[in-house]
Length: 134
Image (cartoon, rainbow, N blue to C red; front, top):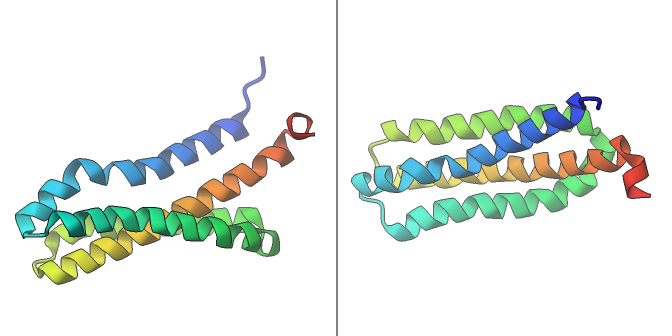
């Protein structure tokens, strides 16, 4: 049995993208409550991730044919890191309104990029395994 390194790397990248989605759920609600953020705004910041994912899936389905999948995937990985770093840095923000705004924006960016990564990765499958998709 041959080990398929491309498929393993695709699975790892998808896994890391989903970590960006789930990891903040462990600490963000408690951290935000200490800052005085209401449950509604905590929920909205998590919902902004899903909003970004939905929007980017539609956009990147059309764009990746023009720009190239590999190039877009590398750009998406960079923006995924930036969104994660931005969300991790909000602990130092003292103003509650700015705190909520940065949380919303960074989660939206992370969701937008995760939707793009998943769309790009799924588009590689018929190319890599054409016999399974004929």
